[in-house]
Image (cartoon, rainbow, N blue to C red; front, side, top):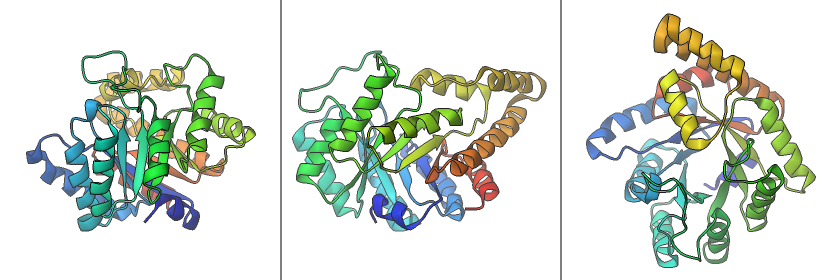
Length: 290
């Protein structure tokens, strides 16, 4: 079912993000974790693929299994990396054959080892190009895009970042899933600025439960987001005293409080970055009771 229709039927909700394993021998453990998360009853689950589109075929097969065997509604990531009209059209036809109706259109990250993003061709340079292509040739898909409560690292100004977000909606995107962030005020400000620009689509906040200090350092280095200094110092102190278990306890408490504040502020739901681990998301969803 189309996510834009599901959102209209149920709020608040929890949704989840999965990262398909590259190696097939890891798929068994992956689907075991996914099966546990059926208890969350997520509105949808997003399924990524790696930089450079290296695991796109895995994404398709895993998304189809999540839908047809596990009963989840998949949101499949699609990027401009390596994109041509023929490849994108063929992939969309394969998704349609598998019963998948939802796409998250992204510019994508540069392949591993490259710092700067260089478009492969002029046709697909931005996520908005994917959106317009799908709206013209594959209108049956529900299309979402990314949003940045903290501006994208490559945006020169906040105003330009917001303008590009609005442009993606004007091209036909129907909802926004945000990059991770740790300050609820940033989400509220982001949504308020968009509404002032006459952008009034659902904006789903992306939430990362922090499980270890090492993992959050790595993730922040990839996405360009920042973390409040006081919270980071609290995590560092916990790591010194109790290691990853202590960090995880604080991270979960923070994520639960963040989700509650976001829902109170009017967020339609919360999108949990699972890191393919069920326990943290089960705990958060249980505390939210939605």
